[in-house]
Image (cartoon, rainbow, N blue to C red; front, side, top):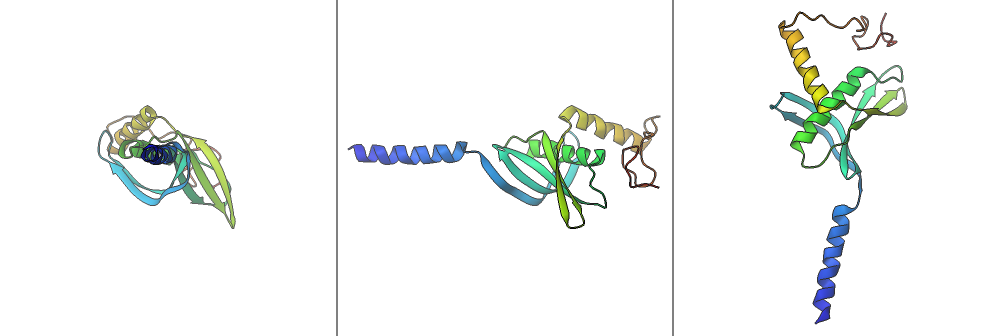
Length: 156
């Protein structure tokens, strides 16, 4: 009579450990995600990985220099914003930018923007793009490459 109880308890224990055990590895590659509300944003995420019990976004950049730009942080922030709404799993507020320079790949962990900053940036960009705002583009845009940094090294 005790045998069925032991079997049921063993199965329950295995399922419980599997569910609560921290995961690692790749969750998805080249995944297209998008939402239309509260802001319409869509994109193709290079890689989504497990970070413990949560998901983390990664993006690969091929460059001549090993540098992470503000535009990379914003891109990953938008991806995190989308993922947090389409996945039923929590998403980490940090991302990884993998910069490939020649044959070497460098990994940079970056802190991502929160949801309010992402929404504010979207509406500010939309207003500037549509001409609804008297604001001009920030003066710190590099004229050589267009990145949002004063001395990015990629300009003239």
